[in-house]
Amino acid sequence: MMAKAFDSISPEHANFIQAQKMFFVGSAGVDGHVNISPKGYDSFRMLSPNQVAYLDLTGSGNETSAHLQDNNRMTYMFIALEGKPQILRLYGDGQVILPDDPAWEQYASLFDLHPGYRQIIVSNIHRVQTSCGYSIPFYTYEGERNTLIDWAGNKGEEQLEQYRKQKNSTTIDGITTPIGKKFADMR
View 1 (spheres, one colour):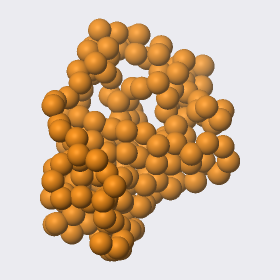
View 2 (cartoon, one colour; view 1 turned 180 degrees about the vertical axis):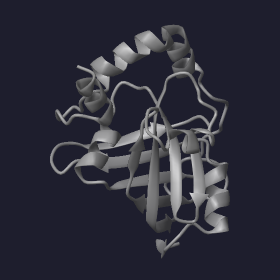
View 3 (cartoon, one colour; view 1 turned 90 degrees about the horizontal axis):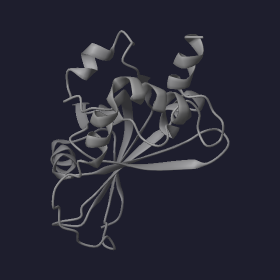
View 4 (cartoon, one colour; view 1 turned 90 degrees about the vertical axis):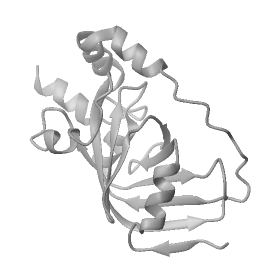
């Protein structure tokens, strides 16, 4: 099966996306490193055939949010680890919604807010592409890892805020993230 391109997410694409237990996001600034980040839990939502969102949890870095300020391009990738082989990519832009943003409540209501949530990324999709995935090995889903949620729950909001200030304010290339700008504005 050769790659096929579409202008929007079809019902068949939506079914495939919903069946996957993880996805990847790719982004890059104008200069510097390209970032690819795996995402898990039930954190992805399709809002329309051309708009998606995901709940982003506190992690060791915050590259995607800074890259979106820099050039506003990102790619989502879903791969079949069970069943029929397939890869599906969503190409689009991205907007960072922080908890103090007026749009937060609109989007946050779509998710279970796990401990450690830090932002929501909303993307307008202009291209959907499927490809074969013939070389992707089979893996069996055994369950979610609770490590990140337990870690965030044990830290509590005050320690998470300090962690984000220290680890999520700038990228590995020194780009200030929206979270970093928030901390700078608080000074």
